[in-house]
Length: 422
Image (cartoon, rainbow, N blue to C red; front, side, top):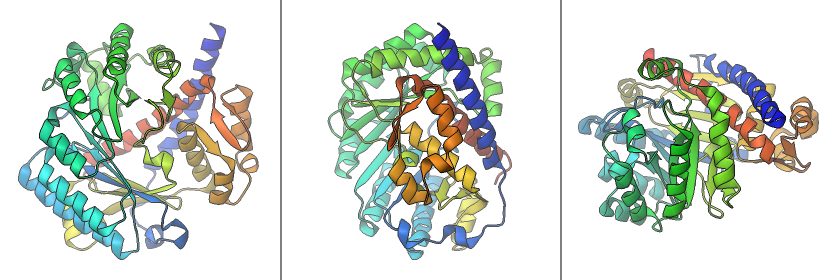
C-alpha cells in the first residue's frame, strides 16, 4: 500500500513538471525562421511523415484533435491541397519512407485516400504505412482496398465494447458487438491490427474496463493502445457538466488492470500505453523518429529542435497552399534543455533511452546532460540500465502520467488554435 502511494506521488510530481514544460509549447512565434525547415544531409533518411485528415461523419465530444464534419467537396479540395503541400517538401529535398495517417477519420473518402497513397508511393520509397479508422468505416471491401494499398498497420478506434459507455461518449453509430465483427474482419489482413481503448472516462467502471480487455484478448487482436482521458480545458469543462468531476485519482487503478491483465499476461510493451502480441509496428512516430513532418490542417512538426505548427483552419490552409506557401503559422525553437527533456520523455514513453543514440543526437554523454533527471528516476526505481536505460514496471505508470500531461498540453494548444482560427 505504501509503495502504491509512493508511485502515485512520484507520478503526480513528474506529471506536474511535464505539464509545466509542456505549457512552453504554447509560447509560439508567428515569425517563422526559414532555417527551421531547411533539411540537413544528416536527417535525409530519418524523418517520418504524419498526414492529418480532419474529417469525421460525427464528432466525438471528448476528442481534442482538429476535426470537422465531413463534407465531400471540402474533403476533395483538402486532398488536392495535401498533394501540393507534400510537393513543397519534395522541392526542399525531403524524402519519407514511414507514413502515418491520423485524424479525424482518414478513410472517410476512400478514393481520395487511395489516390493520395499512390501519390506518396510514386514519390517516395515507402516502407511502412500506419492508418487510423473506426469500426463504422470498415467492411470487407474497405479492408480489401486498404490491404491492396499496402497498409501495414490498421488502427481502429474502438474506445470501448460497452454500449452504455459508447453512448456516453457520443459514439452511437456502432455497438460493441458490431465492433467485434469488424475487428475479426480486419485481423490477419495486415501486419498489425491495433485497437484503441480509453480508460478513466467519466462513468466508466473498473469492471467494464476489465471486460474490454478480456474482449480484446478473446478476439486475438495483435495490439491494443490504452489512452487515458486527457481532454483540453474546455472539453474537460464540458465533460464535467455532462457527467461529474473527472476523477484522476482512479487513473492508477485502471492502469493497474492493464499491468495485471495485459503486461503480466505476456503482451510485449511497445510503449507504456501500447501492448502487442510479439514485435509489432506502432503509430507513435515521436518514438521511432527523432524528427517528423506533419502535413494537413492542424498538424505539427518537429525538426532539428524546431516545433512547427500548421494552420488549423481548412480555409486558411487552402489559401496558403494556393499561394505556394507551406501552411506553417507558428514556430518555436526549443532550448537545449527543452530538447533534451523532450527527447528523454519520448524515448521513455517508448520504454528505452539508448545512450549511444543520445550521443549521436546531442554530441554528449547522457549522464552529463541529463544527470539530475536520471538520478531522480533511478532513485525511485523508475528506470534501470546504463547503455540502454529502460523503464521498469514501477516506472510504467509515472511515465504514462508524464506523457498524458504532455499530450494534454498539446491538446490545450489545439484548442487555442481552433478557437483563434489560427
